[in-house]
Length: 45
Length: 292
Image (cartoon, rainbow over all chains, first blue to last red; front, side):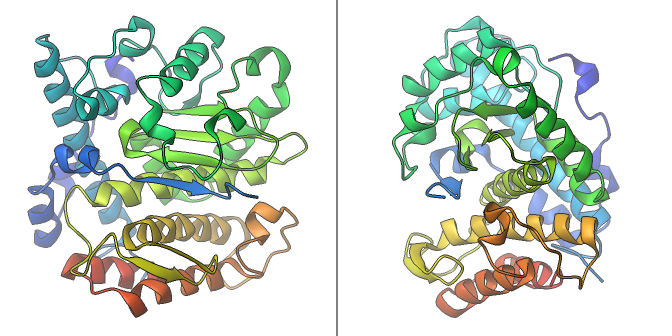
């Protein structure tokens, strides 16, 4: 993928809510990938 | 006012996009450290690499070239993905309730299923009816992988963040594809929220009664399903207008409830009845309720 296809806006800077800004600091990818969650839509349909 | 987390949907877009930028950048960094290589731009297979602690050796996947948000139709890339899903990436489909071989990657989509490609394009175009869904899809989704199954279904995994795996059955319309994309986007967003908050004070793995399907599923599964239903509801509101009860023949959509917001209402009720939520979990439920 080329850089031009990635979103360039700094979304964190656009945030105005202190609560959401604080939550952003808690982001940790290790938690989510350790959490092997798969969801299926209409698997038996 | 409608919002998912706080203030407005615009604020929600910035929040989710910032969360994902951070997640993707951290994942790419950890993945590069693991391989002892220079950091490359995020690629969804970095998630699998990080979780399995095993490098993916296939350069066609690790340096995958794709247009962000597109449907993958290159047979070589699709073939490599099918190989990955049956070997190193089999955890991606480990929990699906049907044998993974029943819905392999549709490798020959470009040659044999132009209708499926058109359905995807129509669905993606319809998603633009909702500025919220359109912008989130643009910012978050890396690509869509077509599956070969004559039933509307699919899966989404946090081991491939930003990928939507979906079927595009013959004779189905772009409208179904739009609902499928909204659903997949909702799954992905729902899963990503667990990277910032536990959502539940009670046991997230406890089995709860999920009224929408009249089944029992874990609390976190129910939560992710609820976010997906919320995104389908937003899609429906954008196409048909809030408060209208559209006639949708396709059983994939109609199967939830005669009126989609009723299914969302039941999903929210299932969680609120059985679970104790964190402040952020409560806030999110309040936001989801504002869509009704």
